[in-house]
Length: 502
Image (cartoon, rainbow, N blue to C red; front, top):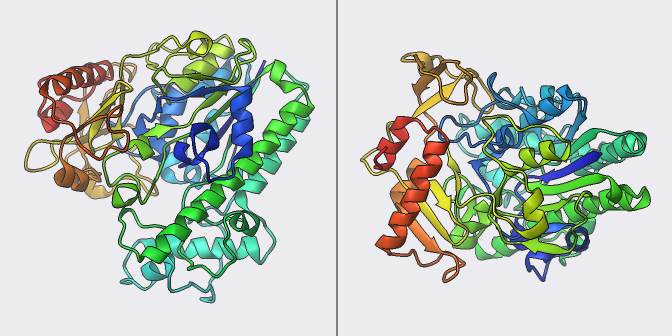
C-alpha cells in the first residue's frame, strides 16, 4: 500500500468549485471530488503554519501550551512512526519555514526529504546590489520605505530577489519545481510498496507570485497595480487595489489546480487508485477582504480561516464522488495514515482514523477545538462556533511550555529565560518536565480587545455577520470547550485567562 498527501498553505475552500465557487478555474479539484470523499465540515486545530504541521505529525492540539515551534522530543511523529515500521516516508516541499529554527525538527522525521528554495522571504540568493525594482503600489515597496529598523525589510526585499532569480535567471516557479520532484519520486517508486509521499507547496500563501498564464484566466494583462501581498489586518487599500488582489489569489489557486492535475494524471496513467491513498488538504484558510480584513492570525478565526477543504481517497473502501458532513480536523489525518498502514495509534494522539467516516459518515467527535497561542480559544460542533476571549484587563497569565525554545526564525531571547522554571510533566510529555516561561507571543491581544467573546450560528448566519446572544447555547458551547481543554491537558492558567472554572 502507498499514500500521497498533497498539502497546500492558505487554500480557501470557498475558492474551489467542489465547495460552490463558480468563478475560479479549478477543474482538477472538481475532478478530484469525483474520485474521492469531500469533507464538508473540516476545521483547523492549532494555528498557523508550524503549529498546524506539528498537529499533522502528532495528531494532537498544541496551541494552548506553546506558540510556533518545532517537533518536541516527547512528540510522536507520524512520518517517523511509519519510518520505524518499515514504511518509507519522503517529504518534498518548498515551504521554507521548515528550514528555520522554529521548524527545523520536522524534515528529519522522514526517511528523506527534498527542499525547493525561493518562496516568499526565503534567504536563498545572495544579491547585494540594490537594483531590484519595487512598484509604488506594492506592499513590499511601502514596507521598504518604512523606518529602516522595521524587521520586515530583509524578508520582503528577499522576496523580490527570489522573484528576480525565478523570472530572470530561469529557475522557474517553486511550485512547479516541487511537483516536478513529486513526479520524479512517483515515476521512480510507483512499482515499490509501503511508502508515504508528502508533497507540500507554500502556495497559495501570499505573496501572490504567479505565472502570467494563470493571471490571463482572470482578465489580467499586467497593467494592474502591483499589489500582491496584503498586510495582516483591516482593509485600508484603495478600492481599485482590492479586486485585482483577489484575482491574483484566484490565479494562484488555479496554478495549484494545474499542478494537482499532474498528480491525478500520474495516478490515472499508472493505475495507482487501486492501492494508493490520496489526501489533499491545507493548514488553514485566509481572509481576502471578508469582514473588511486581510489575512489571518490577528483577528477572530472566521469561517474563511478555520473551515478548510479536505479530500480523501482510500483504496480499501472505494468510496468516490460522495460528501461527508461529520466534523473532522487536521489531527485526524495522521491517525488516518497510521490506520491505513496498519499501525497502532500512540496513546497521546487525539485524532481518530477517518475510515468509518468515509464509509458511512460516522462521527469521530462531538466538538473541535481550534486557535492560536494567546488568542481566542475556539470550539465548534459543526453548527455553532464559540470564540472565547480573555476576560481580564490583560491577556494573562500566559506561558510557553517547551523543551525546544525557538520562535519562527530564532531561539528564545535571553530575556525570555529570566524567570524560566521547570513545570511538572503534562500527560503527553512522557514524564518529561518542561521549561515554562512567560509568553511574549500575544498576537491574540488585539482581536480579543476589539471583538471580545463571540458566538455564531452557522445555519442562520453562515457569513458570521450577526453574533448570537443565547445564554443556553453559550453554556452548552462552554461545556464543550471545557471538555476539549481538559482532554488536551490544558495548562491551568489558560482557564484563568479565559475566566473559566477548571
